[in-house]
Length: 140
Image (cartoon, rainbow, N blue to C red; front, side, top):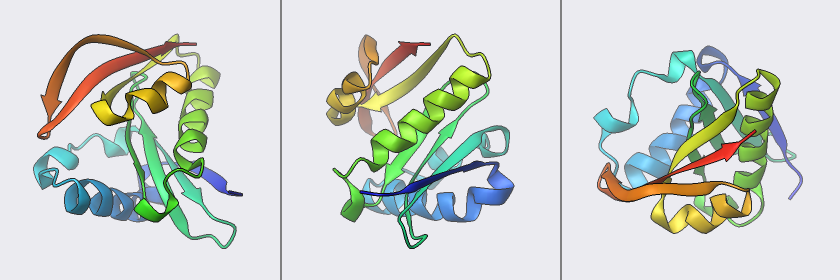
């Protein structure tokens, strides 16, 4: 699927990124509001995937410490390379700024997706927002 990835701060991209996350995490996955809005967004780099007509498809964020998170893709756009493009953009930004590695907490069902990108699972399964996760990392 042809798409564009925009990168920016929360002030610039937050309205659209926040709406995607509300739909995917709060509405669809029933993540509690107070867990989704953790106060870290203003310090992060944000990524938006847009289709050829400028419609938003998905989002992700990169924290200052190299964690990638809040990777969310609208249901109708899943399986079309949107998540992969968002992840690659976040990885590229981390590499450019000199991060030694990127990390994330993957939902268990998404482990194969992240493994295909080169991430390695670490540690035990844990619960976050009522969903089983596992930490993963990718050396840069």
